[in-house]
Picture 1 (tube, rainbow, N blue to C red):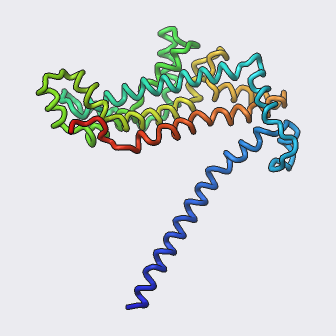
Picture 2 (cartoon, rainbow, N blue to C red):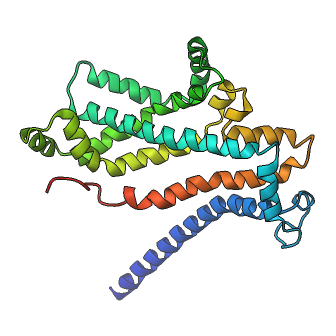
Length: 287
């Protein structure tokens, strides 16, 4: 019996060590490209093609940063502002729309509700690249090609966000709370804004983060819709510079520095908003 007692902790320690090893390898696999990006962003053009990337020689982080915002008359700054506008405003409005649609699918009864929701689930499986050409034709018919709205309007609607909105509504908005609000004389819009939306706050933040990541990394849709470089997001702008780097090698350091700065908003968003979607999911509920 004592032998069995000593074997059980040994198996637990072995299993824990295996899990920790897998987690450590996964973290290393994820962080190594970021580490390379941080080190490469501070190197000169010649050092990038050398074998001393890990050394502190030829460190020119501030010079590369200055060159990044000075290149092509400060084009990168415009691209960065465009990405912030597309991603932050688009993700905020898109999250509000998705959560409102999910709430409607959950709490209201209307004809063909489940069939329509089935279409939403089917749309989740459609790759965004497949929709680029139809969206371009629609934008061309509306005269929106090569405008801000050609990229901004399509990102407002996210089928996966609607699905998440319904899941959060089912789990964290009790029907009894809504009935109590209606009995107190609150209308449907007031009930949603003052009661349900507060309870859906963590879900709203979760959908916002998914939307923010997708829009910030959006590449194919802007490439199809836009020809004016002043409207480019960071992803498309850096691709343009990287394509020019084979002819003009001075673009290599600024592309790497621009890629490093392009990662920062997503890291900050997840770090700052983490406590909201991990906090109490029934915040704002009636006690």
